Image (cartoon, rainbow, N blue to C red; front, side):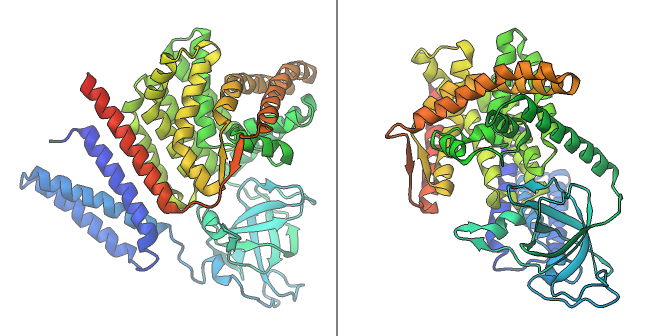
Length: 518
């Protein structure tokens, strides 16, 4: 009889595998989700009967496993849009003439005209802002679906605004090698508008309680951004804004290039990798200060929650936060290799909410693999670092352990997606990561001080800026080394799969060898 932990592991993997298979199966076969649901109920009842009535434990477990496999298929099917007249993307690539009974009584332009609300934080660029529009009313009918539009930066359109828009909707397609449609499908967006014919702000203040709360949080976020800009010089203010608030559009391109070449891009990207490393460093910092491990865990968790509140409750940041919490839990438990079920639970919950994440969201994949690297490789790398006398002071060994563990697992995928291999990343991270929690803590204190008394925030900002300058200096100096960075040609996905299979086999061999030595 398998242990409950093993059963949980198997059932979670079967659910994830079901979602994986569905990504390909639904391209060729259209399943009726209703009949799949009936089959799921039948399997669930059969499993219960086999266990309780017929006392066939083995058959019950097998049927229950099949239930989770089909659950993945069924949930993925439900995530696919039902494109009909009640969905906005039904009107993609069509031109509609407006008549007097439409919203645009004064317009005879070609395009799709609708009223909608900005339902996500605007993605502000230098030349424009991208707005996600939902709660759509078209031809006096409420429609499902979302639209991503390119709007001007001025006049300013913000979260919660109701807009009257006229434009020709399009289906998002590939941009060179990037599958933009697949990327937007994760966000349940199947319509885009690149060129507006008309956009007007409506005098409507209708907001839900959640929207009012989120609006308040975003107000704090942008007030914090203003304080950072007032207390730090360029480009340190933009780097701290990226690290703390997820606002990286203002970071100069030359600095982004240096960070990318030196393997430090993760420190200014709100991702599972970034949050996992920051959470782990905060845990180490609180332990270093003198807190007991369980108190340090609570403080690091509180810091993580405050961080997520500050960056504004994005779906992507929430996913990264969950993965970061799993890494924090694994590190705080002191038994990294026992935390795989927690990671699979987090991944299964996220896929249950949005099964499109598995293959279409690079951030989810990197987050999962980064935490898996810390869980599976952390102990072995930590033992190796101990054997070569890496010092523990200033969290050097802890920083290096987390970086090497996470980077070892995500490196093949980074090379596959971005074609970039940084040979100096380990050294760069050793030099940079120990100061990262101090920057985050000082940044929070500096921002809080700015709400109370701006001159105090400016004084704290001098120390914050010196640490950020150190990061920029490391990135700049290491990047000029002749073997720092390599641009690689596109690697076939088959090789990436083989690499991960070999990596998994190596981890299995290490685990078995350790068990044998005991």
